Amino acid sequence: MIRLAAEAMRTRFECVLHGSDERMLRAAGEAALAEVQATERCLSRFLPDSELARLHREALTDWCGVSVPLWETLERCRDLHEATGGAFDPAAATPPGFTAVALDPERRAIRLTDANLRLDFGGIGKGVALDRAAVVLREAGVRCALLHGGTSSILAIGAPEEVEAWRIEIADPDDAARSLASVELRDAALGVSTHARALDPRSGALSTGPTRLAVARARSAADADAWATALLLLGTAPVEFRIVG
Image 1 (cartoon, rainbow, N blue to C red):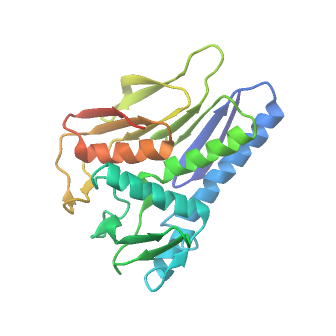
Image 2 (image 1 turned 90 degrees about the horizontal axis):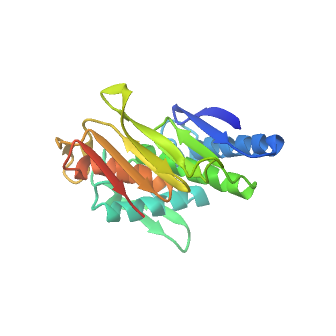
């Protein structure tokens, strides 16, 4: 077993790799974490030289061509915005929100149609990074791994030989030492969101709903993250769990 870690997106990303070739596992893990950091340089709203920062500068006056990672992230945001009825919105803090993002697939270009709009991938960025890291691992031949970003975004590839799946404990947001539930993951991802109050992009006001913990399981970490964010607003119970995709 190899365990590697790196700092990115203001949190700690870790990967645990199982296999017989230690050298291959270490090289694959390092490449996967490098992909996480490359995703940060693309999507971060905090780095002044990120691709997102360039998009904010240039896409207000003209169509702005973007990289494949940013384009794929924006396409996924569009689909998730629609699927959640607007509850997931990476521009929630700047009305009119994601509806002011225009996508041109033929040119792979973006335009922001509202001068106040700013994108924030905080609700999906870690999941995107894990999905891209998983591609790197699979292409390198890794068949068993667990990756997480800050423990709120988790992705499993296969499982150790002695078990059917990775077992993930869900902590009580009010008592980290207490487990509320456990979830088994194999070739799937988990998103966990514990914000007590979240901005509702549909109304522009802070949500006053009852949900304090939202957990979503999906095939991709990006989907799991986005749905966990949306469930804070869509949920009707203190703890919400949903399987999507």
